Image 1 (cartoon, helix red, strand yellow):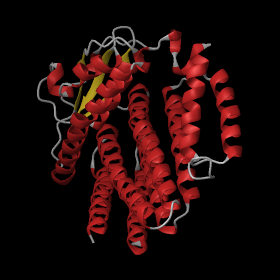
Image 2 (spheres, rainbow over the protein chains, first blue to last red; image 1 turned 120 degrees about the horizontal axis):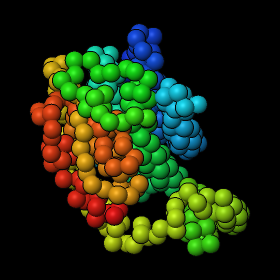
Image 3 (cartoon, chains in turn yellow, purple, red; image 1 turned 90 degrees about the horizontal axis):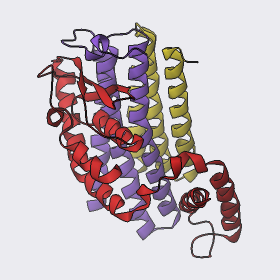
Length: 85
Length: 119
Length: 167
């Protein structure tokens, strides 16, 4: 079971590379923010998977805090792009 | 093993949709269609990978020890936070993109641009 | 006063869920319960204006929560359809995008928020902008069929559900 979780985590890591490619290429700033948002979601999914793989609850607690903080970060970047900050 | 098969199926569906969302991020032509792929597919995929962990936790709570049950409950809370925040973030990015002057490519209609919103 | 109390109770319930399995009074240790009570009182005092704006307690009615749980079924079906739709468009690359306007006729902030989030997660649509005076939503639609769509085409019956839950 543990190996399966590690394989899934490696797949999620590969998908994060797609997000990094979009951040490097992305012609406009909103494109880059979309890439960053996708990477955040994948990091949260990978943290939950790794928490199950190592049987450590603290990983999932970190994932909860990361989810809420990355949401606030995305909102602030969006507000900045609108010109309201 | 019945439970193991269910967990494998959940993890497989989750990885498939997460990969599809990331691939759509590369393939689509402009920021709005990329948001379609990124938001819908990664949310759905993350729901399924987390469901795999939740089923795993509850099953081993029954069999082994209580710490697996704590794992499942915390994974459920993390999933809830993800599902609530993800579409809201996508909405904020879309609005910021339109207000900062990035308009949809190949659009057949853009009511917002010709519309009456002055602010 | 009442809003602070309800917020504190909800914060305490969340704290109990997050600290389950720490001790042997049912599932919690006594230190966690004391810390939870103190922290949730602080959260209730500082957050009383956030959760219940204008002393509005409609969401405490359990009937609305039952409707919300029933709403999850059509919502999850629509979400699965959305993902298969996006999968088809990622693979074939066949898109016909545009931004259209709908008037769902919802009045409360909570209802509009729920509708916008539901629209974002369901087939081919993404909410972009809202007109705060008339509560019209501007929606990016990945496959535009008509330039003046009716509501059923865009958000398959969700406004009816949300009117029951949040209005």
